[in-house]
Structures are given as C-alpha cells and as structure tokens.
Length: 312
Image (tube, rainbow, N blue to C red; front, side, top):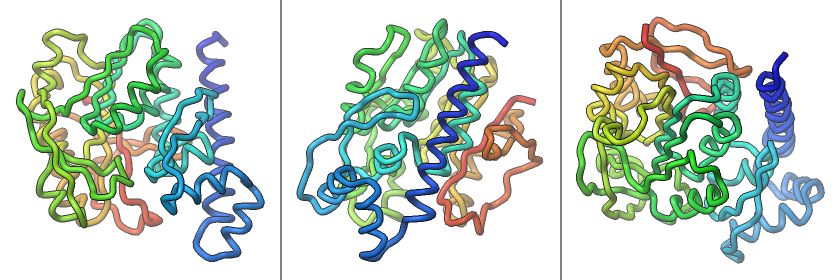
C-alpha cells in the first residue's frame, strides 16, 4: 500500500476517534440541567469553564482549537459553529459522513472549491491531501473570513482565499447575517431566507462573482463543496457553463423538511436537469446511489444533510 493510502487510513482512524468524543459529549453527557453540566465540567474541566464563560458573555477572547489531525487554530467560542471543533476537533456529527468521503476522495492533483468555507475546516482538510493541485475558498462573512485568513496564514501557495459570494452575477450584493452573530454558518445572500428564518438581521454589502467568470482566470474545479444557505440556485445559474464543460463532483448541503422543499430541492432539480445524479453518503463516507433526493423528515433532528452529485 502506498504512502497516500496509508495517510488516508490514518486520517480515517483519527476521524473515528473524534466521532467517539462527540458521542461522549453529546449523546452520553449532552443536554440541559445542572447535573449534566457538572458531569461535563468534571470531564473537561478548564476547557468547559472557558466554554461556559463564552456562552455567558463573560469572555470574548479567541481560544486555541486543535483539529483531529493536529492543526492548531484560534477561533471565537462565542460562535456556536465552533463548539464541536473546540471539544472534539471536528465538525458537528451530521458533517462526519462528508469528512470521511472527502478524505477518501481527495487526490493530489484535485482542484477543490470550498464555497461557503466558513472558518475553513474543509479547506484545511483539503490542504493535507491536495499537494499538486489547488484549493479555492470563498467566504463572504467579513468576521468569518478574518478567521479563515488567519487559519491559512502559514499554508502553501496553492490556496486561494476569496472574500466574496459566488452567485449568478458580478456585482455587490446584500448579505444577511443572523442577529447576535452567534451562528456564522447561517449567513446568506437570500433576503427571503433571512426574512423567514432570522429573528434579527444584520445586513452588509459584499462582492459577488459568478463561477463561470472566476474560472476564466483560474483553474476549474474537479470537486466543489457548496454550503451557502439558500443561495444554491443563483450559484448554479452562474456556474452553468463550468458544470457543463468540466463536470466537477459536487457536494451540496440539502436542508430537511419544508425548508428543503422551498430551497435546496429546487437546486437539486437544476442539477438533475444538467445531467447530474445524486448519491447519499453513509457514516463511513461511502456513496450510495439514489434515483432522486426525497424530502427528508424524521432525520434525528438534523437540519441539513450533505449529498454528492456526479455527472452520469
């Protein structure tokens, strides 16, 4: 077995250990109540105290976080997107199938587009495997982009960080951030989504590009991850020629329930019309072919599920 495959096996083993930590934190000792909190304090000690201080607004400082493969970064605990990373070194449990799929899928010469990169977890994971290709990351949330830049400051020169949204046009567009800024992953270019689902809205203007324009001066993706909170249909409008000519593998987050029917499944339909076929990802990161993605209900309270789309 060559060194690349051995490295993938090592990463999958580390990912599984992180999953076990998640089970300990969320399944066995998760939930409200003083007893549960005391148990978590006993297990995680100062780490849990720092977390509680951030949740109560007592501490606003950034804390060191180590990914399951050992990369050290600094992130704000006040943003709840960082909680799983802080305690377990990986993203929330619903992201684990995708994490393992990408570990298996990434090749040395891939060109990976991380669209909706957030703090850069998948960008940093891709860096471990894509050594002869390129990584292009896109994040329009100004605060989150600051942390993405900092996390990648010492990275190789094959990572391109873009402070912008990918939509169907080259312009400045409104960008909507949930009030309180405690869930950076929910930010969106969709005013309709913001008005429907945010209790308080912070609005800013951000640069917007279409993928078809971006690839005129950059290498086209071989694989892209799309997590842009209701902006998928506009992205696909601006990516039509690239998808037709280059046929990259696409990973797209699909919302569950009625929200998914209103937004995500419309984007999935556009991919079907472009000749793409959908696949679910099991917990081991393996693909299972589907005829069509049906509305997802009763999914253990998951708000979203990642699916893979490949050209037939």
